[in-house]
Image 1 (cartoon, rainbow over the protein chains, first blue to last red):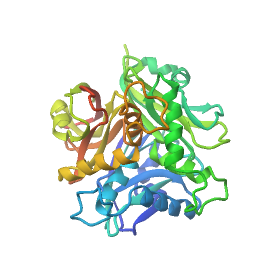
Image 2: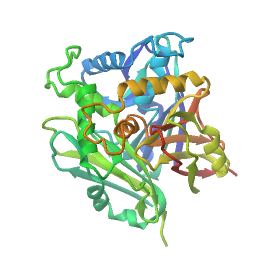
Image 3: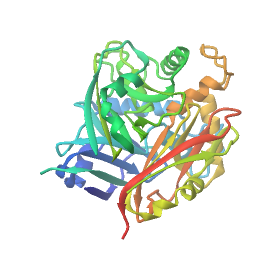
Image 4: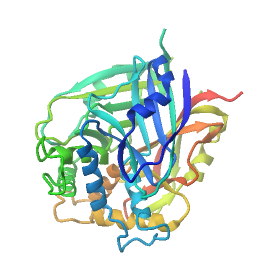
Length: 142
Length: 142
Length: 142
C-alpha cells in the first residue's frame, strides 16, 4: 500500500513551529497502515524539518536563539548576499537540520516518542507557504 | 517482507557510543533480506543517532569536545532551563545529528562502508535507557 | 519494484559539489517508477550529502566558508590528529550534514523542489573517489 500526498503549509514567521497535527490530519490514510514508514519531504532550501520536544514553546524559542548565533545574518564572510541577509543563513540552517524525516508507522499511527513533535523550521523572514510531500507505504491493516 | 522491532538500548554515560553490533544482533531477520532498506529511529529528543568512524575511540571523544563547545551547557541565552543545564543543549544536539538513520541492506547485511559505525549520541548526563524502533523491508532471499 | 545500484563519484576537491545530474544518469530505472522513494547513501565518514540551492555557485562557496569556521582544521581540542588536520573536522562535518538522503519519486522523477539539488560534500583535502549506494523502490508505471 502506497500513499503520496502534497501538502501546503501556510506561511509562518521565522522560527520553529510545531506541525505534527497538521501533517497527520493531511494524511488520514496513515490509519490504514498496520506497519510501515512515512517520509516527509520539504521541497525548499531555506526551510526545513526536524523532530524535537513537543511541549514547551521555550524550546522552540531557544532553537531560534542558538541557530541565529551559530549562523549569523549577514556575516561578512558570505558572498551570496543578493537575496538578503537572512538568505545564506537560511540555506545553512536547512542543511544543519533535515529536508526529510523518516518515521516508523505502527498500528495506524506515526510511532513517535512521547515528547517528539515535528517542527517546521522557517529560516526566512518572509518565507511564504511551504510545500511538503508525504510518502507512506507498508502493510495494510485487516 | 517487513520487519519492525523495538529495542531498548541500556543507559550510557553522556557521549558518543558505538552500537552497530548491538543493533544488528537485535534484528537477526536482516539476514533474510536480499535487498532492502533498514531505518533506525530514536524515540527521544535528547539522544540521537549518527553514522561515523568505527575504529578510533578518539573520534568519539572529539565529537563530545566539539559539540560541548558548539552548544554550551547553561548558555545564558537559553530560556528553557528547568530541566538542567544539559537539557536545552541536548535538544539542539539531537537536531544537529539524526533522529533516524536510513541504511541500504544487501545480501542480508547493512551495506555500511568499511569505516562506518552507528553511534548512539547520549546528550544528557543521566539520560537512562533509550528506545529505538528498527523497521526494515525489502525482497526476501531465496 | 526494487532498484539498487552502486555508484562511484569521481574524486573532487574539498568543498561542496552539485551532483544531481550525475546521480540521476546513473539510475535510469527511476523513470519506471510511478510513485516511490529513492535513498542515496554515502559509504564514507569524511564525505557526506545534503540538499541545497542548485543555482548560484556562491552558495556552495559560502557553505565551505561557514563549515570551515564552525569546525576549524587542527583545532587544539582535537585528540584524533594522526590522519591530518582536516580529518577530525571531516568526521564532524559529515555528521552535521547527511550520510543518506531520502527523496520522493513521482512520475518517473525525483520530486525535488525547483531550487533543490544534491550536494556531494567533500570534507578532505584529498578524499579520492566516493562510493554511493542508491536504493529505490515503489510502484511501477504502466
